Length: 176
Image (cartoon, rainbow, N blue to C red):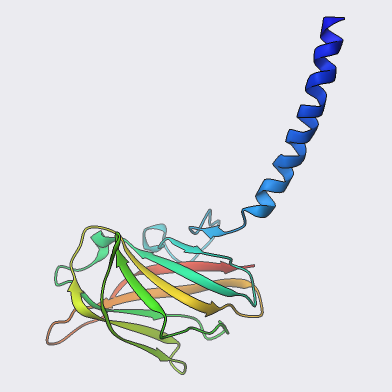
């Protein structure tokens, strides 16, 4: 008798919990990090982490592109060059770009978006020399109409007299 009473009290709770477990993943949809990549021409040590706020096609989005500080050359980074593929048809807001090191915002001298060369160059007001993580935040990005995977490459240039671009890695962005 006692077992059937407990069963009647627990059954509604289990039913409600199973319904909520199916709803939570729908509510928490956001791309974070590149995830598990089965095949890629990009070696795993060259894959960079990122996070997209929505990751949905044809939506306004915010990209958090992360650069490990240990990959920055000794001379530091005076500018960050992001190259994207020609089949990426999204739009960037070059007036709304941030560079962060930890909680500190790094002043930006200028941002140049070259649509013909498929590059976004962020020129910094000061050279970054850090072991901490650098984060490039692209605000107000209009995602492309078509979903797919897009390789965004990252190069940094020092603010030395003869700056040479140095390959840092690749973000493998996935737009749903």
